[in-house]
Image (cartoon, rainbow, N blue to C red; front, top):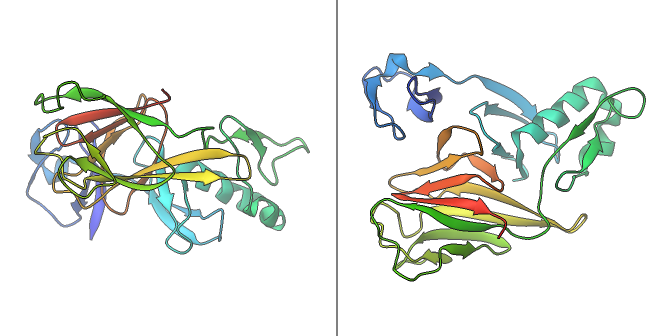
Length: 247
């Protein structure tokens, strides 16, 4: 069984076999250390705000998202935790929150903590238009000369990778460390409040996809990890780094 462990040097989170006792090369700082030096990342139990399924997640830093195994709903860990806390505080009010979602920067009342002297939490879930990806680092200078450095995202599920494959969005790069179908960005539209939410996951790539939240640590994603991405976040595929931007 694999467990999340953090690198003692740079804090990057990796998924490692729990009984592995050899040496590990960190995919971020490239330092090689004994597996025993890596620290376990604690797990927490939360509830899906759409179908109430109980899920186990990991506090691996940044705005890491969760995909419900039952209804496939994707949300931030903060949203799942807030909903779980509300259910524990007031189970009778749980249904009233079950189908609610907030827009970017909107305050929502958490059941059991609202207008009667309780607290109000700020939950960030969406943007009024799809975000874009901007090239910020090209280590091997493989981005095609003269090619646009701003990549437009569209509504729906998109596979991104280097040019020459079958990706929905082929990036204008010959970076051989980036797969032709390297990672997935899902832009979901919420008709209730007319906002877009963006999530990121790896697509079984050979070299993996790295994600860094604004002011956070680098995290290596696997196929079971879904991250809600926001403006300012970074995505590294191969030797190419892209930043999530508004324009």
